[in-house]
Amino acid sequence: ELKVEQNPLFLSMQEGKNYTIYCNYSTTSDRLYWYRQDPGKSLESLFVLLSNGAVKQEGRLMASLDTKARLSTLHITAAVHDLSATYFCAVDIPGTYKYIFGTGTRLKVLA
Amino acid sequence: SAVISQKPSRDICQRGTSLTIQCQVDSQVTMMFWYRQQPGQSLTLIATANQGSEATYESGFVIDKFPISRPNLTFSTLTVSNMSPEDSSIYLCSVEEGTALYYNEQFFGPGTRLTVL
Image 1 (cartoon, rainbow over the protein chains, first blue to last red):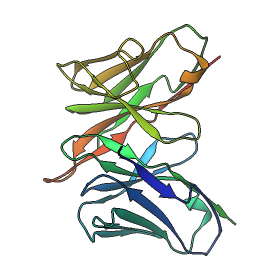
Image 2: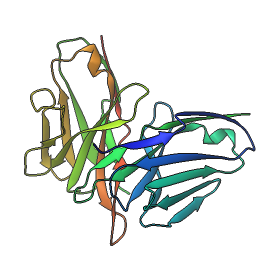
Image 3: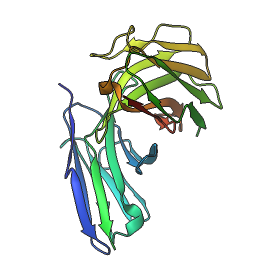
Image 4: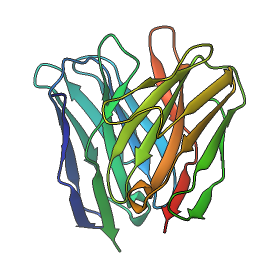
């Protein structure tokens, strides 16, 4: 069975602190996507990681991909309240156009 | 990226009734997808809708319960039939776009929040 697991599921952190969200997947996939979802809103694309060793950064967020370990990380640097949201990773199933979404990580940054 | 709209944005329905959700895109796209997001949960793919062919349903989802239309390259509908409280979810459509020469990416509509009483 194809699985995408994230941890932690819930994360409460203080402003200014650093933390990492982990995304493990069981299928062979070279593409991994990170999305952000604010409460009551749709999904916003954050990063697309296309190959082993890929690293992308936008503001206080940095995402990386290790396809051999089937692991992606989303690192948060010096968190601010505006980063509070639920973060999903997703992988595409090779040979199809379908995505499998991770369980999601609900992040709350405390002022 | 494509601009995607959904109607209605939310609805409260009685059990046993049906609701049709519309998804409109401002450009022509080949692949459209319908997802369900139950409260506090992740996204689950319901079906893939290509223009000119029958929708392809994922395990656990059937056409009688979730009929889908795809009459052209910019529009699709999802009907939730004979609703029960367990159908209360956010329903999202997405489209796949080529953002570069060598990969595509899915972009999501704003979602339809359905509550079944």
